[in-house]
Image (tube, rainbow, N blue to C red; front, side):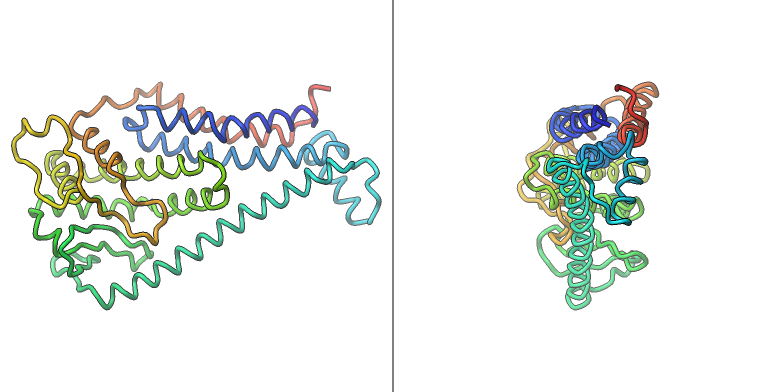
Length: 329
């Protein structure tokens, strides 16, 4: 298992910095947001497994030829309270680090879930006091606020979309349908679960710059996915105008010539702060508008297959390195 630990460590380093940086700078994710989302998830999962696996394999290396046999040897030592003479200080340190990191990641994931759930419950209680149901849109609440606000509040059967009076005053019926379809796509596609997972990754490893990079990229991708869903029901021009209105707080120009470049949003409204990492940025909004105004061709079947194959490979290599017998001596 000596070489397996080094290979896992090398993979962990690649997935911790070079790979996320390269993916965040790539332009193709805008052409295939779902495919890019799968790749981001595989990078996160494979990276965490590689980090823990490298330390675990290194720590158990004296006890067996692979993780299964070494774990059996470790269990025999622990159950029968035998001294592990073959384990040195370095191996004990590696094992301790692996267990601590694994426990830290799981604990942070659960803590983030509890914190988000508590904040959503508090936010829902405030909405019951400050909002009123929309008469012609089920599961939609309206708050009395002049700023254009539109967001969704996940909650299973109690999920709602929240709009402001200020937004309703600015939108036409078609633009309102675009906003509602976009927000409901977040709920139907369970985007809040993705946000939860990547928010937990960032909270668990705040010292890792790419955890923030990954969270921001995933936020942009889920907005693109919701835009694509909205395009199935409304015209492209209608969706563009709705995005610009929500972002800037004022009606966009109606002349087609003025839409050759996206307007710079002046103020942004997005999902509330209780849903970590979901606030749009000016750059992200401008990118969404450019994507709609100047659409690029989607990835070919071969290109999508290559990306999905890479994602599958990332998820299978760490387990293989953990369980296969030592092949390199």
